[in-house]
Length: 545
Image (cartoon, rainbow, N blue to C red; front, side, top):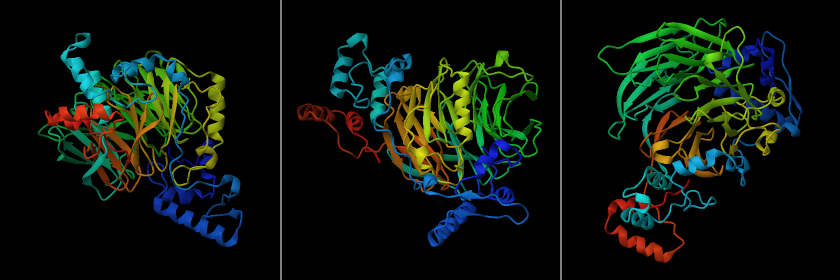
């Protein structure tokens, strides 16, 4: 995702409302390829002042020792205010309704027919569910996982409490697999580990990162929860222990060819023996912990590789997404460095991909993109070579820089799929600006993976319904871009990591009225509430921001 002046296919990022000399960009660019916000703010202010006073259509910002690069400003290239794109009021659900994922998600989330598709989050009457449990309908004498998911989908987090505040931007934040710990990384070069096993945040450990350029950009925790890794603008991946009396801090050498090198995305394999990374030199790296060396390097994209992931627990299938706008699927069993070929390509985005999150079933995944959309894919439906080339052409024609410019009007208004797009669903309503904002599936245990949630450049958290594509929750509370969000694997609890330097813990606050269209049933429900305070808590409806 970073800006490397030497590559001709990246010079398009320097055009737009104003084009800046390469030395200025290098000096004002942070290590994730993001221009220093102070410099960007000054440039935009000067440009606006100049245009307002002179009504001119040409503007130049010239460096001291090299030729200038000019950029034209016109009404056709005008930019919207820094607000999120409009949500699609009627998302196209034709593809997802015809897929097997539709019924699978309905089953996982407990929606077995009582809920109409038009009201995916209206939980069946609580008394009815209790009655069915008591009479053992379908031989169920207890609440199933699906029943619990139905309750949880109505108790979405809606209130934020700041659990920690830093003096710099928070870049990464994630719960461990069992939810007993939370790890954050910020621009101050520290990795903080919190004990969350009791439901409270208690700072357990602070690890000063080594060899950090600008900021720590990604972190990952090993499947056994004993180690974590992190990356920055460096030719190393660093690995540290989480538990233990003695501290370990080891640098894993990747030996890249580029002098200015960075790993943007990191993942552990399911067995913890391998580390997968995506880098700014267009390559995917695999590091073998047993052999203690790099075992694979493949040139995978025509631009920065912003995100990588394993498809499932087998660790054979890999996903990669880059600034070329393509998501590629790789099979480890057929890969070789001399002639790397993906088994398939997923094309449909019209700008670079910032993040990939697999569903975990070996088939489905979501991708977040600078085109201001999230797309849901079935990896069994690959795009044709012609579609991939067409999408690549559209991406290469983009002439705006998402790190410091506003969203182009034509991009924000884009509603229809491009030709050859094989995605099952497209989600719109959040903004991807300034940094590689991340998106995730909600947990399987508590929500049946019925939701997709993402950070937003406007400081919000957006929650989508997987099956309808509509926004079901908007959480407002941060003063800066929310780069990362993590949902506790078992509790209804979200942690947001924001560029305002805060970690926000979002939980459900039950101080809102119950939404019911049937007054008689409502009164009956109220009678049951007197008998059980716990039921009263479950019956209260959250309020959207």
